[in-house]
Image 1 (cartoon, rainbow, N blue to C red):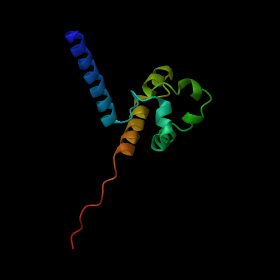
Image 2: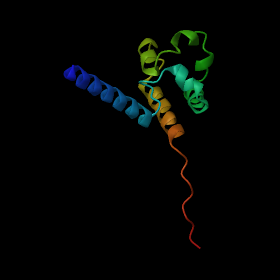
Image 3: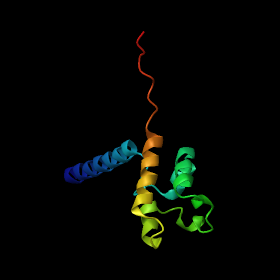
Image 4: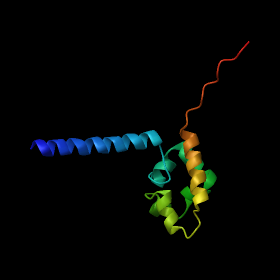
Length: 106
């Protein structure tokens, strides 16, 4: 009983650590479903900038639950590594809080 409790707690802490890492890293072309990216206004703006029309694509209903990385494997070269890198850069920039202006010298 004690071993199973310890094993359960260890599994829980690993799962929580993974969730915390994902939260810290934010949205990703590798792990975040396209629908989740599109549900966020900043994420949707990045998608539409780098992949114009993706959320209006006739098959969106089919691929929206996949990640961009998963969709890339089925895209026959239409989603290049460069495109995914550009999307990831945009997502990272959208998640970076705006820096407050520094003190000004007089």
